[in-house]
Length: 128
Image (tube, rainbow, N blue to C red; front, side, top):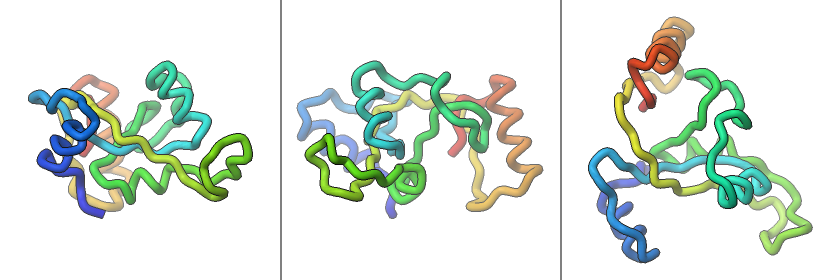
């Protein structure tokens, strides 16, 4: 799917009565399960509860809802009002700085190691 544009992000924030994006902020998608989404809503993101991914243990976001959807989980939601088989993605305001860019849709092991090294060494705080 298409990325969240700044214009679409601004319109979404305005519709929710939230302040506009500031320089260095983006609206990005995060795929997760319902229980985790409720926990995030209550207490924010917790890196200690995250899984190791491409750049190591981190909280991951995407410009594309279709990518975030790959990380959301389908469960029966008998204790909620959500329809059976619903998936959960969050649209999150994220402060992004020191971005490492990866143009490859399927990075090879060398690219992954290079990106991981940038993040773990402090040379990048995010991979796009």
